[in-house]
Structures are given as structure tokens and as C-alpha cells.
Length: 113
Image (cartoon, rainbow, N blue to C red; front, side, top):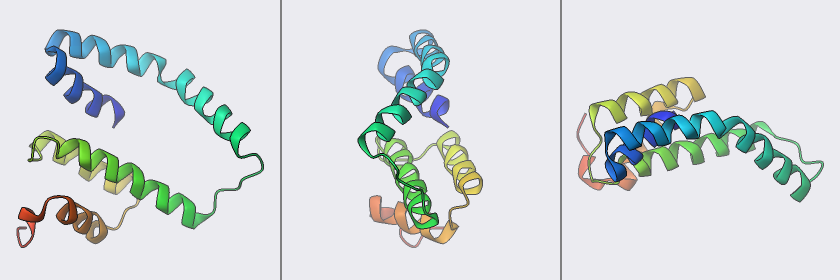
């Protein structure tokens, strides 16, 4: 998911070749960055436990961020739609809620299937 979004963004900003290189660097460094972020969050909020409600909320936040990135230019491409659909399935997000989130961000989509 991250690599697809990064590829779209970097390719748009810097062109295809630099976009692929930037995405490759991001994917290569993503694991150490994620570990550092987890360490920082654990230091900032020690002894916190993920509840199912919190995990559901975080999944919706992640989906919302991906949706906002996909709608940056006002439309969702077929490729972006596939990534978003994959996120809905893999994160177990209710498709009705996902559709409602999309409609809230992009009102022109209301009534379309």
C-alpha cells in the first residue's frame, strides 16, 4: 500500500525514474523507520494497550489518509481504486463505511455505483 501510494506521488512530483528510485528508497528504509516510530510512541505513551475499538479506529484513519491521497487530483484512477479495494479487504473495513467515507470526501460520487 505504502509503495503504491509513494510511487504515485513521487512519479507525479519527480517523473517516473526518480519516482521509482524514491519509492525504492522508501521501501528499503521503511522497516527501520517504523521500528523507530514504534519506539518513540512507546516512550511517549508507555503501558498502552491496543483495544479492538482503537485498532478499528486506526484502520479507518489509515484508510482515510490513503483515500485523501488518492483524491488529491479530484478522481480515483483504476490503479488507486485497486489499492483502496485491497486495503478494505485486508484491513477488514466494512465496504459500506468505506463508501460513506469516500462520499464524504468527494460529494460528486453520491448516487454512483
